[in-house]
Length: 158
Image (tube, rainbow, N blue to C red; front, side, top):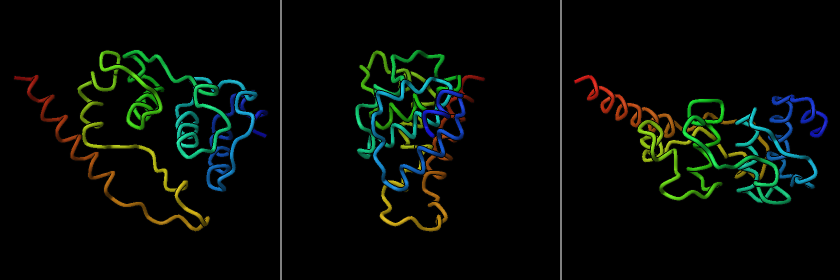
């Protein structure tokens, strides 16, 4: 099922399949045989990163997803989510000089505030159950970081 949807570019179906595997804690076998997940879907690559973090990939993340090097424009296109989360979570190793997330005023403040856009609670649950309302903490962190960014941007108007 996964190979069929991958070859057709059906990103939603691929993402749902990866999530189902994750929820059920099923290791994705033969990852290198699937071929690379292209840059079209930041969501699919983020799920793969989470799967890698939780030991659900049969091989390193680099075998199935483009993990760098990234350039500054990746933060302003559809790759921004993967680039940000991969940097925050350590899926990619970058030197201080090449870390584009830390060079960005906006993303560096989000990083400093500990903001994450991914909820990896499905990997911590031993029983599949009805989804509970998420905690407000990530939203509060994001709002705090956003206020800081607005303040720094308003100083440019002076």
